[in-house]
Image (cartoon, rainbow, N blue to C red; front, side):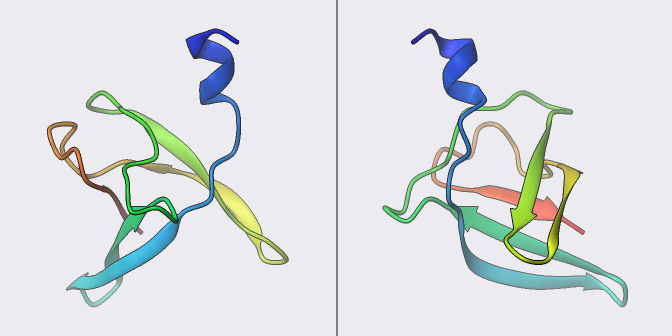
Length: 75
């Protein structure tokens, strides 16, 4: 399997922290179940986030690509 195909495989994420940034924006810190960053990303990239039984949507990754331990999404 090449790198491109691996990026299309869904990964399970665990929310480890929620920060209230403004009255209507929260930032969610996400890692895989084994406590790692799900994948490497570049500035401006986004990811499809899904909650089974609720829905899914595309969100920008708001953490710096230099953070190697986690990803953050501000929603």
